[in-house]
Length: 102
Image (cartoon, one colour):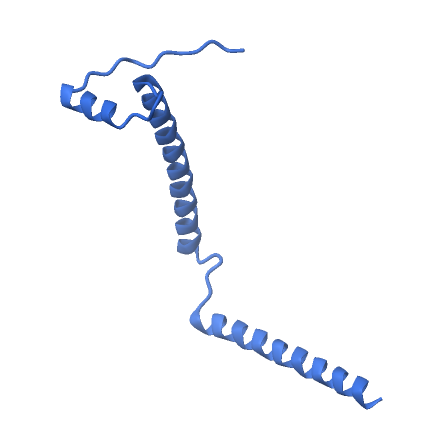
């Protein structure tokens, strides 16, 4: 088990402290509130940093032209998917007709 650490004390205006105390839940201490807020903010910033890193990586890839489709290539791919779907439907109808006819 590791020992707990102490965060540096912070000075706030009396109004700020009063507004924080006003929103505490039943049984919650100001220390618990601050600890939870600090942990949530640290998690948020870690996720934000990861998202920024992913975005930068995507931009670098885009600048190199990696993984990007032109409109023509995209439409051609969609046309291939539509043609394949139509063929699957025709095959399924033909198989059904064959079963009912026989």
